Image (cartoon, rainbow, N blue to C red; front, side):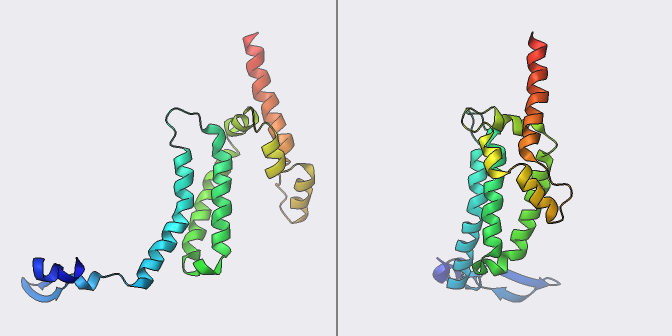
Length: 174
């Protein structure tokens, strides 16, 4: 198309100054090189991770709240790998910005016990996901030793949230 577009349609853009055409830009000026197409493929590869997570939240007839934390963590892990990968060096800053945005929203999960409850009450995950992915007292001690004084024992926190919210709900139905 690009090769014949100038003949069929004329130039794509005409730059004017004070109503006078000063430059005509042909369609062929917008031809993508093989290097351009390689960048397009790389960007698609990077963005596929976010697309997959978005699809998880697009179920119309299936509950998906329990998938929120694992999906965010999967996306974060995938982008952290790409952030360190030298093949994506030219995208490192943008991937870092994406990771910062993910972290901003991920931190909001800490304030919303509903997400932890959705995982814990799921018949498959229960507390196993939290035990495996987030850890407990041992992981908390390691984080504190690394200089993170606000580290949380997530196993204990999940149990606290479960006890607080489920026992309150259960008591109100009696």
